[in-house]
Length: 191
Image (tube, rainbow, N blue to C red; front, side, top):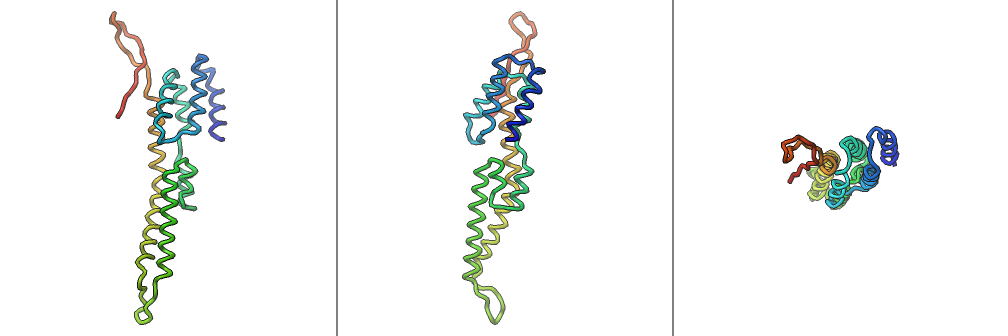
């Protein structure tokens, strides 16, 4: 909801200054709406963004990019405090959230099962048969570390893809047949 409000405010604040034509402002609005439900794995959405962004000015593309970038602060804090991939789900990273959720629950199941099966040797005081419990502890620590790193890697990948989709089209100076300098659309292609 905050993004829609921010997008609307930016649209009305910069629309007169951007002097966009009717089709440009329609593309600007369509892009803003398309980016509300953007899926990192859906390459077709990023191609559609690239096509719609071709007619926009660099200022309009920059406004869209800045208003739709993801942040990793809140997801990091939620994953740190609550765990279970909640921060990743809040960020829109269902793949990372599901990995963390399943990993932590599996590790907890191992830990509890191992704790139920382990026995304490009455002579030495050592825990016997607690390998499963230790494996659960290691899993809990490993998946919690994953949850702390994942918001940053997801944010970096998401923002890079969004930037490529929006900003890979620009005006470039070229020479025409009469050796005169003029500006034409150019696209950056990366593999």
